[in-house]
Structure formats: structure tokens, C-alpha cells
Length: 369
Figure 1 (cartoon, rainbow, N blue to C red):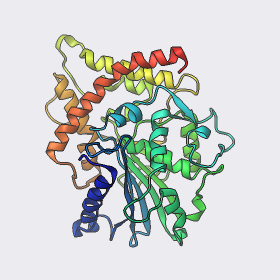
Figure 2 (figure 1 turned 60 degrees about the vertical axis):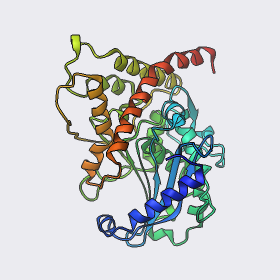
Figure 3 (figure 1 turned 45 degrees about the horizontal axis):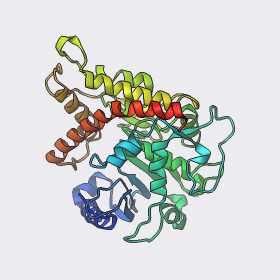
């Protein structure tokens, strides 16, 4: 949908409120849920014809004694999302410099190497921190969470899929950093993170830092007590393979394929090589991109095998990144078939942009910019 931020926020508010009020949804989600903050929308160039770049809302359930900070994934119609946030990995930000809108803070002792976050992830988190709920509370997320009382009996959960799976853990860590962050886990009964299908947001130091603040809880995403504070991903999903170099290199062989001449199509090879170059540039000084603590789910191939065309390859990529999680988590599908088709096409365009970025990244590195 196109529109200015308020138009999009109001439309989403209507959809979410209606959805959360459905008896079947409340039954599946263990009780009543309602919007309590947002939704808030960020657009880098706001207009009547622009698309949402970042979206976030908070839902609460008195029956579950829980608040959920829900963060949207990539809007495939947003070039800003794809170029600046998703692909912004060729440079990184020191953790202590990444969020200028928050009070200055440090890092707990014993974290080595020094944590860094990709420039794209830092950009997205700063967008989230700068959002204001203009529909209801007139507060930023931070001010809203600060204003809540009686939270020692409540659980706070940060969640998101895809881009949201990288932003959710990074936002939670920025807010609850024990070395000077503005919020404290002791003020809540529990603070959990539920990232799904997220690409890697930073280096080994960031992964260690996150695990220190949010230790893994549970080892199985599909059995009680379930799994918190670990990126849950489908092993056949290409997106969580970014941005660890060895994992990126495995993307062309994720699915059984029989290519013409037994050669992987050049477009796929070029895209992987561009992604590897960007990852190597971003990890050159602070150390390579390293996955957050994670749980790998066993995916299932979809459609005729082996794959013989690029179209089939990208259809499988889209299926494994979208539909597969609805099946794994047994959740109601929210995306129409028409939207799925558009997402698949835009995913291919995003993929095609990776090799074009590689020479630009190399030039930036050579010039020190």
C-alpha cells in the first residue's frame, strides 16, 4: 500500500485491530490481545505515493500478562529497505557509536572482539527508536515502555521475521544494554526476543554480547517451554544464510538442481559473489559476521525437483522464506497469493542488485569511505 505515514498507520491499525479481535485468533493466541502502541510507520521520503520502510507496533494481552513489540520485515516495494537496510553490510558501526539517540554507554567486560553491527541494521534500529505513535499514545517506544507500571509481573517480547529478525534482537539489546542502556530487565518478569528467519546483524562480539544479556531459553521452537533469544530459521531459507561467508557460498546448492551444462546460472553466482564481497568488507576489521545463537528447523522442499530454471530457484527461495514458516509454526496465512507472487518477483530484483553493489563496495573500501 502507498501513502504517507499516518495514512498507512491508520490502515494497518484497522487491519490489526480487526484481526486480533477474531475469536479464532484469540483462541489460538491464548486469550485477548489488543494494540497498545502504534502501529508507527517510517518512510525515508514521505509522500502520498511512498511505501512504508519500517513498521512497528506493540500488542498486549492481559490473559498472557505479555507485551509484544512486533517489527516488520522487508517491504519488497521499498528500495530503501533493500539497498540501505538489507544490503548495508559492507560497513559496520561500533556498538557504542551505533545509536546516537540513546545515552552513551559501554559494553560488559569480557566481550571480545568489540561488538559491531552492520550499518544497515543500525540504520533500521535508529529508525525504530525515532518513531512516535501518532495514533494513540503520542510517545516513542522507549517513552511508552518507561511509562508502563506494574511490569514485574509482565513478560516483554521483541519479535520479527526476516529484516525484523535482525532488527528485533538488536533493538532489544540497545534498549536493555546493562552497561548504560535506558531500560532494565529487572523491571520485568521476563524480557525475551523471538527473531525468525533473520540475517546476521553483526560480528562475533555482538553475538556474545547478545547471548550474555539474553541467554538462550529452551532448545525446541515447537515444544514447551519453547525457545527464546535464538534466531529460529528454516535450513532451506536462503535469507538467514546472510551474512556469514561460508553460509552464503552454500546458497546455490540449497536445493537439488539440474542446471544446463551442469553450471549454476551466472546470475546466481554473481549475486552470491557480490554478497560474499560485501560481507568480507564489513567484517574486515571487526571480524567476520557471526550468527546470533540460533535454532535450525528442518525445512521441506516444495514443488517438482530437481530445479532446472532460475524461475524455479527463486520460487523455492520465496516459498522457504515465507510459506514455510507459516507451516512450521502452524499460523494463519496473512499474505494473499497475489502478494506472494509480487514478493517473489521483488525478491529476485533484490537478488539481482547484489552483484551491482559489489563493485561500489570495493570502490568505497579502496577510498576509505
